[in-house]
Length: 481
Image (cartoon, rainbow, N blue to C red; front, side, top):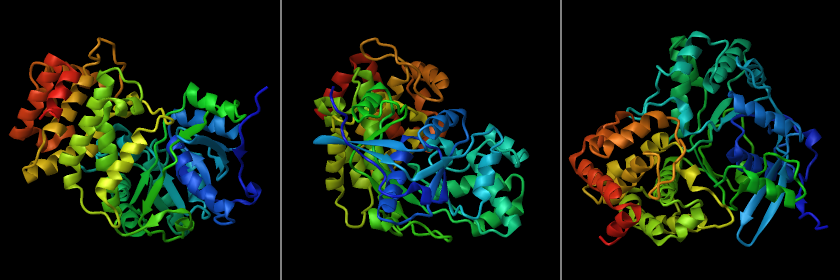
C-alpha cells in the first residue's frame, strides 16, 4: 500500500490561542491567504491572541462551517509548485460562528472587546456598488431590508453596524474593518457601503462610524482554484481523504496594507506583508495587469472550448492576445509602483498563469463578468481612450465577453449560465449580434465609455468579426495587425 505524502502540522499549541479577528466569508482565498500568514506568525510564537473566528451570512457558509467544525477548524492547504506539491494544515482559525438568518451570533461575537479586526472576503460583487456611478447603491433589496431591520440584518455590513452600535453603547472602542477583496480602494469601498447603509436609518450614527472606524486599504493576491474532485484526490494523496474542503493554491502570495489599525494588529511584516501608504499603486497594478489579464484570456478560451488556464496560455492565439493587450493597452496606463518593474511583474504573471499544477479553470475566470469587467477592463479602456492610445485589443476583449454570454461556444457546445445576471445578459448578447450598440449601452457596466464613438466602432467591428469568422480567425487578424 502506498504511504501518504508528508503533511506539515501547526507548530504551536492551538489550545493557547485566543481570537482577535472575525473573518466573514470563509472561502478558499481567505484560507490560503490571511489564515496562512497568521499560521506562519503563530509558528514563530507570535500573534497568539490573533486567532480567527470564521463567519458567514449566506446559506452556503453554513455548509463550510459544518465541514470545518468537523475537523477542528483545520484547513488543508496544498501548494502547487511545478517542482512538487506540499501540504500543510493551517490552524489559525479556532472557531466558526453559527450562521443565522438574523446574524445574532455574529453580531454578539463582533461586539466582544477581544475582537479588534473584522475582515471580509465577500467577492467583488458583494459591496452594493453601482458600477456606472462607482457609488454605494442604497436601493439594493438587502440594503433596504437592513435599513429597516437594523437589529436583524441580512448582510455582512448590517451585522457589522449592529456590532459597532453595541460597542459604542458599551464604551468599547470600534474594531478595524479590513476588506480582503479585489477592489480598487477596497477600504474606501467598504467604508462607503457601511456608512451608506448606516445613513439610511441613523445619520448621527453614520457620522460616528465615519469618524471613528478604520478601513485600511489593501491589495491581496494568490491564485486559489475552486475545490472539486481533483483537489480532494490531492488531499487523499496526503492521507486527508476525509477533508471535503481542501484548498489548492499557487506558491506565490502577496499582501500590501495601509498601517491603520487603532486597536493593534498582528506583526504581519515579519511574514512578508508590505505596509505602505502607496497601496493604491500596488492594487492598480494588480487589478489591471493580473485581473485584467485573467479577463483577457477567459472568454477566448471559453469560446474555443479550452478547459484550463494553463492550456489557454499554451494556445498561441490566446497568449498572443494577452501579450499584445497587456503591453500596448494596459501596462502603458498603469502608474509607477515603488520598487517594481511593471514589465517584470507582467512576466511573473505570465509564469503564474502558465503553471500546469494549478489547473485553474477558464470557466472560473469567465464567471461574473458583469461585476469584473467594470473593475478590471473598463478602467484601462477609459484611460487608453483619454490618452488617444490603442484600444482595439480591449474592445475585442469586451466583444469576446459579449459573444460568450450568447451561451454557445464556436463549436456549438452550450455554455451553462455563468453570471449572476445571465438571464438578462444572454438576450442582450443575442440582440447585439445584429445591433452591437445594445450591449455597450449597459450603463451599469460601461458608464459613459459605452457612448464613446471610437470604442463603439471598435467594439462593433470586433463583435461582428467574432460572429462572422469565429474566435480563432478574429484573434489571428488582430495579432496580424
